[in-house]
Structure formats: structure tokens, C-alpha cells
Length: 298
Image (tube, rainbow, N blue to C red; front, side, top):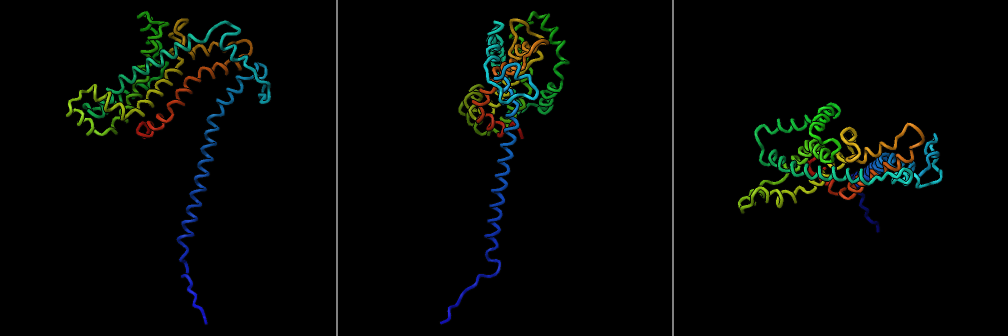
């Protein structure tokens, strides 16, 4: 008895093959993007990794050209940084940098959040002009304002004073902090603040208990950026401080001399001074990424 066979119409499996090709292409693209991300990450990490490796070499090995990758490792550069050869301790400059960075960051947050609230949730008249005025203060080269600031500090008797750096760092970081916080607060639903006002909450309570928890990733991102900018600032700290209020970047420049070899010591000092910023960035990396993706960068 003859059996009847049913043949699928021509092109019936074409959609499945098309979906399979698209899925394969998507997997290939994801793989290429992942490989590109790893290459970019390694390129960004390479200078820091090279600095760490150089800091573990002796001065003679660090100064060779090309450098010796297989040279013996030593902690001599780190011992020099902590004053083994000179007796100069790095802790006062590190404490000064920590004090100036943390204090200025707290002041920036205390001033930026209410200002951003007034410019976003309760906008003032011509708020765009206010925002561009804030931004215009960052367009002035820092060296252009160095002499006026020096003369004002000299007449006020605040040279070599750590609180002068706190005031300067606050004023330098406040414009970018207001811009960032305004972008974050613009995404806060107005309804929850209106509900809190109906329940009798005042503005300080709304800012502390309603708005702050909602925009905490943005606050963390703003605080981290302000801390990094303050910690890395060198120009004003170099000119306006001396023995008492010198910061870590100023202390780092003291290892650069016109005589002798200093590359390994400078790299060791740079690694030690970079650790607080790296630790802060690592601790707040999830908040930083979340905050920047929420609204700081659009």
C-alpha cells in the first residue's frame, strides 16, 4: 500500500533559519562588544599597572630605557615615601588633603541640594540663566584667578591655612554639583513632595526624609566627583600653602628633584596618594554608575 507523504511548502523553515541567524549575529556582536570592553578596560588600567610595577623596582631598574619587566622587586620606594631616608612623614599632607576634601565635599552637598531644589522642583524665574551663570564660572582658567585669590588670602591672613583650601574647593566644585543635582532632582515625582506637604512636613523634612533617599545615588555620585576633584587639586594648594597646610599632591612634587634618580619614589608616592581615591571609587562604584545613569549624563 502506498504511503502518502506530506512535503512542507518551500520556504516554510525560512523564518526559523532567519531567527537563528539573527540570534547568532547577536551573540557574535555581544562577544565583540565584550572583547572591546575588556580591551578598553586594560588600556585604562595599563598606566596605573605600569606605575605600580615601576614603584616596585629600584631606581636603577626604573630608569632604564626600555624598562626591565623582569627586574627584581623591592619596597625601597615605599620606604622612601614613608620617610625611611629623609625622616619626613607623609601623614600631615595626607591628613590635610583628607580634611580639605571631606569638609569641602560636605559643604558642597549642603549648598548644592537646596540650590538644585530651587532650580528644578521649585524653579525660580529665569532659572536657565542661573544655571548657565554657574557653568560660566568653570570656564575661567584656574591660573587666571590665582593672583587675585593669593592677594585676598594674603590680606586676610589665611595663607598656609587648610580652611582657605576648604573654601576654595567648595566654590570650585559647587557649580558642577548644582548642575548634577538639578538633573537628579528634576526626575523626582512632585506628587510625593506634595503629599508630604499636605501631611505637614516642612522643607527641611522634605529634603532630608523624602528627597534625599530618592536621589541618594545622585548624591553619592556628586560627592565622589567633588571628593576626587578636591583631592587631586594641585595649583592652588601649591601656591597658597607652605609647611602647615600642604596637601598630598604638593608633597608628591617634593620627590621630583633636579639631581639623582627619583622615578621609583615618585611612582610609589603616586600609588599611595591614589589609594584613597581608588578606595572611595570602589566603595561607591554601584552608586556612581546608578547615579550617572539616572540623570547626571544625558
